[in-house]
Length: 478
Image (cartoon, rainbow, N blue to C red; front, side):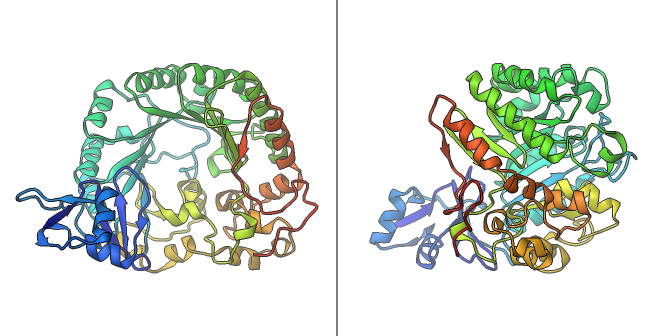
């Protein structure tokens, strides 16, 4: 009897993950046993296989089915060996050009224009490399990605390779019904992350007139076309009072989630923001009040307060961003940034970074970790300075920072966010001072109380071992 892999399953092997598969629509690969992988690798629609208990389980789970006459696996599904470390996603700035003049852009090293972008030939070469490396999901950003003259060709080429556009970061000014219809036709389950920086304030931060009008038009269009929308919203002293009304508006438009980001100390914002940046404890205090008001309102929209707390009313749960690990499961080998460990960030000029939030800061410092326009991606993911940085274990953060070695919160915090540490101190290995303020300021207890008194049941998804919310007990030993 002949069996063939389901069209939604693809077999992959990496240097440290030799037996795995992707299931279409899921960002991360699923580990397999060697026995499972080797059996699936024979399900090509050609080889005769005897019926076994394992084959039956795989068939019932939807991994394989009995092959029809002449049916074989697709090029995407066929086993592929990738001689590099495993990275499932890429966050790719295809162009630095933008039709806005944002005061805070974290991609920019200064106020000069970002004029570079990938040529079409460089786009194809880079996607060839992504495919070779076993990367499955792509986020497109910029600049304004839809300004790229071959934007839709890039999207089509991603789809042609069996990869998928997981997220599009855009200011919305160039979004059209035609583009959204084609995304649907390509079967792209893409989340649209649309910038919207508060009622009455969006034009000011984005540096052009009518930006707010264009953003709201794009949000309404995306929802009409059936797309998931996340609003990317920067908060500062100027627009703080507008945040609640902004959330109410977006909730009424059917936006699934708002991500509120403290406009932070990137090079461009330092030049343009004046005293508009909220201090860290000021940010935490104001966001605590805002979360309380949202809980009283009965909004359905999810609220993700960057590096603070994330809650989803429809699911009835919340978690704390600064809690990076269950204290009871801590180990020294955990990556210092799990986001950087899973996603390759590529700037418009080809430079690779731990995340795009660090790109402008590193660029202003003249630091390079490699460039995909001059070095094949699979080489950067096999060894060298970039790989060393993004696979750096938390033990290096602890050894680098005396306060972390003696901190009772270490096994939950693990030094905090690398991008914030870099922005505050210029040192990627420095501890994140904002997380010290979070844990030592008792914000977990304050937020727990808000959710307990919200009038509906909320479950906290942040696991902190037996650590007391007031910090009176040491986290348990691993």
